Image 1 (cartoon, rainbow over the protein chains, first blue to last red):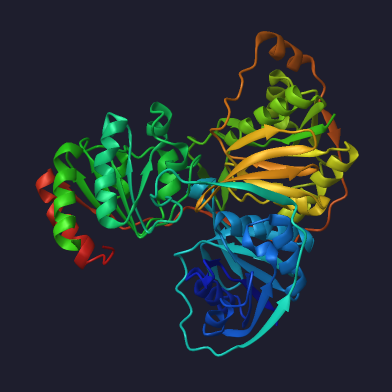
Image 2: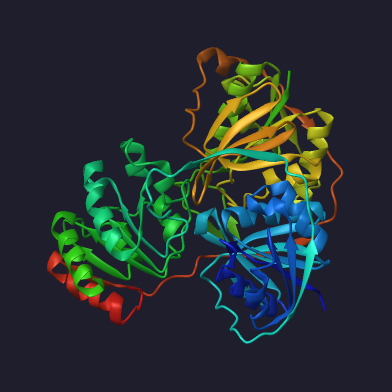
Amino acid sequence: MIEMIVIAETKDGIISPVTSELVSVATALGGNATVIVPGVNDTAATSGAAISGVSKVIACVGEQFSNYDAAAWAAAIDACAPAGVIICAATENGKDLASRLAARRAVSVVQDVVAIDGGVLTSPIYSGKAMQNVSLHGDAVVSIRANTFSPSSDGGNAEISVVNQSADLKTAVREMIAKASKRLDVAEADIIISGGRGMQDPANFAHLERVADTLGAAVGASRAAVDAWEEISHSMQVGQTGKTVNPSLYIAVGISGAIQHLAGMRTSKYIVAINKDAEAPIFQHADYGIVANWQDALPILESELKALLG
Amino acid sequence: MPEIAVLVKRVPDTNAKIALSGDRVDLSAVKWVMSPYDEFALEAAMMHKESKGGTVTAITLGAPDCDKVLKDAKAIGVDRIVRVWDDSWSDLDSNQVQSALVSTLKELSTEVVYCGKSAADTGASSTGPGVAERMGWASVSNIIGIEFEDAGVEVLIPRSVGNARTGVSLPAVISCDKGFCKPRKPNVKGIMMAKRAQVEVMGANIPTPSINILSHTPPPQKAPGQKFEGAENVPTVVAALRNDANVI
């Protein structure tokens, strides 16, 4: 049997929920998982041991894990991990690390896996306009899209070992420039409300922000909006040349649904579209479409949500 | 003065429809372009040369029909254009691609590599960090700002808490997001130069494949949704999101 190695995602010293999804992928690929928990200490390792399907937890401990440094992380994790198939989360850093680990072991990497059937792994290509189905021969590294596989349940009781593994940093963070806005990033949000050119003026994004605040959502934008208005930053752009997102709920306001945009959000669990043009292509992809001006729809949406969520 | 390389890739235009023919994508009718993020990598490479001197080599991996992206880079002003290829290659996996590129970068004595943060076809983001690991180099990914220093670069990397101003010593691979610079357009002289420029073709020894592409399939289709006329239906949709979809 091929060994499965899961690289846990952690945030603020706690294992992120996606780690349980990675363990269930390990099970689907036919093995119990050794979970590597990188960190400056071993506190996050305990929650990794509680995931069912985990045979062993290795806390990989070193100062290099205080900030992401691709070379140092790959070197330390590689030293802790046995041979086998390595499974990472397909986050920005997770994919970067997956590439490094695969190269370090001179094996191939399959990124953004969204389905597994027997030994066949499926990833979107051309930003989801088609799917590619591949098989692995021997050891490999795969990265898995979050929110796609059902998580492995709790109830495990795996043994934890602690390995102190330092590695040299190849980059130096000189300053962390805090975000001007405390708003969630679209790549991390579970709910996103995005605006397009139909918002008519960047100042009107304030209406989207008010709805976002009620929902705890991030505010996104189409490429057309980002290109047209300097005030709308590229970091908000959802689409093929922006961010690919996979939230539970995506609300598209004044977005026609260009293929470029659909490529970045089509896998959202639920899509709501608000557009005055009944023929807009976005409606073909929406679970709930509302043909209306945003000026009419957004105030009602905001007050309804406030009534519901306080 | 640094030997600078930029990796560029030929991809279908991001607005292109991707058709399937049998169990493979059919790209015979698409318009081909340089992958959008690579344009920013190319601009960063040119800025590096203008700031610190050296030479810029644009490198692509592919069959002769990929020469066009190299000519486009030449028209912008790169010094050399190199295509890595062997006619026996097809459907290369990441291990093969990176091995081939590393062999070329070593031959060119490259000290810094620029690339786009991902290619618009696979979207994998594997090549930059993978090449860096094989070279034993530093890498920084998805940068949104850059300053050139004598022994390295200072880049801006977006993190969840803010932007990290990060120092990187060369040699290194730098993968570029868009937005931090404005890729220059070729001028007439550049385009004339590019027409006459020779593409250098380099081969490489690559490992056997370890990933098999079995098929391409259309994306899963969602069941058709519900469509309502008029803003007065917003409460109905909110109720459905709450009670049926359980997402709020």
